[in-house]
Every structure is written in C-alpha cells, then in structure tokens.
Length: 371
Image (cartoon, rainbow, N blue to C red; front, side, top):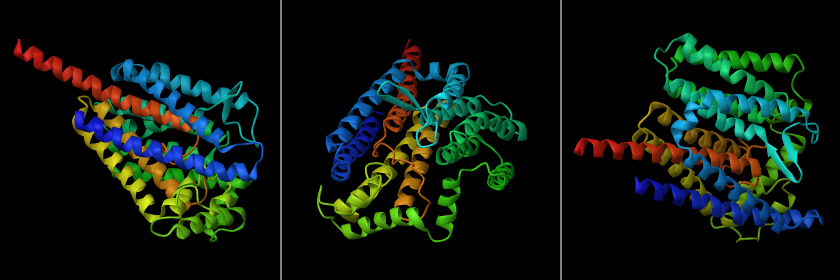
C-alpha cells in the first residue's frame, strides 16, 4: 500500500507543478491585457486554494471513511441541497447565481455537489440487497434530480451535465442492467429536447451547442481556433516556459484553456506527460479501489472518483482540441479555480480516508487471528 501512496503522490505532484507553473505563465498574458491584475495574483489564489483543499482533505482523513458514509444521507446530501438553494439568493454574476460570497471569499457550491453525489450514490449502491428497475434506476434518479435541477437553474449547464454523467457512472458500476441504462439515456435525450423546445435553456447555452454543431462560429470559433493555434505552434517540444504568444489571445488561458498554454510552451512532449499522468492516476485509483477498500461502498466511491476525474479531464482536453463545445469545465488539479481545487482535494482526501481505515481494520484482523 505504501507504493500506492507514493505513486498517487507522484501523479498529484505532476498536476500541482503543471498547475502552478502554467497558471502563472497564463497570468502573465492576463496581466498584459488587464492592468488591474498581476500574474502573481493568480498564483497566490491557487496556492491558497491548494492549502485550503489540503486542510479539507486532512479533515476528511481524520474523520474516517465509515463516518462519511454513515452520514451521507443525513448530513452531506441535505447540506448540499440547502447550499444549492441558498446560492440562488446571492447576487448574480453575469446572470448566473453560482457563488456564495463571504467577504472576498467565493464558494461555487456545484463543485462540491459532485463529490457529495459520488459519496451518496456509493453509500446507496454499496448497501443494496436487490438490484432491479426500482433500486438501480428510479431511486438513484430521485437522488440525482433535485441536485441536477438546482444546478441547472443557476444556470450551469456544463456542471449539470457532469453531475448527470457521475450518476450514470455510479449506476453502471453499481450494477444497473444495460436495458435500464438505455432507458435512462433515452430519458435524458427527451429531457434535453423538452428543455430546448420549452425555452428553459439560456440563449448562450443554445448558441454554444448550435455553433459547435455548425462547425463553430462567432466567439466559440475564435476561442477554439486560438487554442488549436497555440497547441500546433508548440510543435514537439514547445516554445519554452513563459514564451507563449497565442495565450495572449485566449480569454481564460489560466483556466478553461490552460491545456492549450501547456501545448504552446511545452509542445507535444509536455501534453503527453500530462495526459499520461492522468491515465496513470486514474488507473492507480481504480486498482487501489478494487484491492484496497474492504467495503463495497468504499470501492464504489474510489472508482467513481477516478472516473469523474477521467470525465472532466476528457471534456476539458476535448474542448481545447475543438472536439467538444466550450463549457467552462476545468482541467482537474491543474486549472485555476478555488472551488474546483478544494472540492477535488476534499474528494481525494476521502479516498485516503477509506484506504487508511481499511488498512487499520486489516491490521486489527491480523492481530486478532494471532491472539
């Protein structure tokens, strides 16, 4: 198990190093365009987010995995719903109510809702005795729906999509039959069509989707074009740290398009290192989830967390490569974003909480056998 911890720490270190270096590099371009900000500000905010996330992770570890699962439905789920309702009453930003503002501190509740949903569904599927249409489809759908609706009306379509994807992943690894999953997919398609035709989707959300389906036009086309230009101009080994030029034209180079900045400055080699780190990280989590956790709910959570990282990283990279409409989804552990980093670190802390408790139980079992 020590090897596993070292390997996970190595992959995490790669993400953190990439994040800090390229958030600062991207910050240089933001500084040039906006005189009221400095590159160091972006770096400082990320360092604070990592520190707060680490503190949250340590708390999760200290409280043990069994405690978190025990209180999944009594504390985490209702608290998430309360916070998602509360955020709707805070001042909006650009027409969206996504943040709870406390002084200079902002919290994007929907990022934490992803981890909460993983925990709740892992607890639910881990305790199932019978698996049928009601238990593997209707009840999980009932758990998902309030969260998805509240995030959708913020509005935050991309996070809603990821939350639905997380639920589908948990249904699959939780034992849903494929015919029920097909029904769930049909249900989602019908729901999207109803929301679209009923005028429930914002104009900019529709524009992002339609512009992508029509080979990208307008602002979305410009963003993706610059991202592709940055990646292609980097060549094999890149232009060097801080030497990127196309990043000065990317609107959110420190967050949504940080992958393109990495491609421009480190080239294909740098991108491959980062992507291989994600592959190794996800694989290691799945393996340790299967072997390291002594409970089914623990296995489900760890594997679900790994697949959540895979989904979000894939979407971000696909956006940068022009294979997916621009969504505002961050690159896990790398992109700038306080709530994203903190929620990921807290979710990651829960992984270690489950593994460490399983080790303790294993050691106690061995001692009891000896005595």
